[in-house]
Amino acid sequence: MEIGMLVYKIYRALTYGLSPLVHLHVRWRRLRGLEHRCRWLERFGHPSAGRQFGPLVWFHAVSLGEGMAAIPVIRHCHELRPDLTILMTTTTVSAFEVIKDQLPFGVIFQFAPLDTPVAIDRFLSCWKPNAIIIMESELWPNLIMSASGYQIPLALLNARMSTKSFKRWSRPLFLRLAALLLSKFSLITPLSTTQAIHFQLLQAPPAIINFSGDLKYVVNKFHVSEGIPESIRDLEAQLLDRKVWIASSLHRGEEEVILGAHDVVTQLHPKAIVIIVPRHPHHGREVVQQKLRERGQCVALRTQKERITSRTNIYVADTLGELRHLYRLAPIAVIGGSFLPGLAGHNLSEAAAAGCAIITGHHVGHFSHMVRTMQQSNPLSVVQVRTEVELGETVRELLRSPDALERHQRASKQVYEALSSCVTTKLWSLLHLHLLSKILP
Image 1: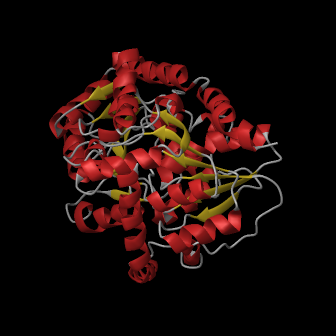
Image 2: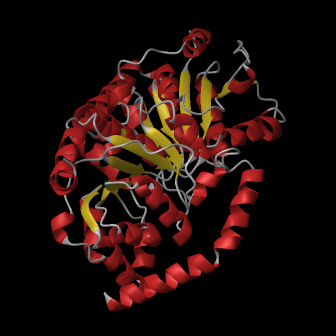
């Protein structure tokens, strides 16, 4: 651990020395709209709300996916322990815009502090959390070591580490630092056996590694009784009598794959329409302006409230927070972030919860365990394709065969129900046993 502590001290000194440049970088991000225009000082640990009296648990997630996975646990915690104050942090503005409307009443939201000594110490001194629960893959040395210094217990939920990150942390000096950081956790719940092995190879104490299931399967559970917004009902009415499929979470360049596939689909179904949901809304607007309309495509853009006509063959939903509703409008969901090298996939569970037949590419990275688990439960639950032609042919055949389409839809829904059951309950039991029971009244 001596070498690990030395590496940490070097990291702390570097982040302290570079703090002025980090401050300028955040100001630059604010001007570009990448930081919240009014609340950007929260990134340096300055609070915009007051701490309430009593025990406080801090949930931290980086972006939207991790934040949404935390919400079922936060809701469960809020219901079982109403005496607790819950603080939720994320780093991205897009996560804030969606998550702020999903949190239970009384949960405090702040933007996460940067991992610089001053920002972290200021944040911890202000909020004085009794426990810190980190989502997925956030191993920030200053945060973890400062929390340990304050004797604040830590948990890492839905723990995962990409192959690239694992190789980086496995280098001799970084391995010593990883071992030091992981030794400060009271609980790690890995996504899969492979991920558990990764953390063990990074010398996490075996006793703190426990399985509970993937929280991303539970994201949709608290939306079951939620009504359908009027704007979605209106869109559904516009899509009546049309063959519809949806391509979601598309990264830059993947729209070309979808357009090529749609050309294949329309050879048999000329009135078919594809709903394109880009990963980032501004990308959707760029695609409409620079590619689709220049090619003579008849496109409707959601943020412009453009109506679908008989000629419309592409609908671009350039919004945030509506994907779970949009999945209800299409029997087939193609999950983006999986068709180009270097991408790492996206969550399939929202589409499965909506009962969509699911198709994805082969570049699924972080979500390979989810694809593999679902396919092992039922091979029809997820179809993987390699090319835009194969994608188009798969969509075309499913639209042509109602019986085959129904079998795929039923498979994904049943697998989702099986995999999502009891995850939150199991996780809460682990949190209570390893963390909360030891520090809360």
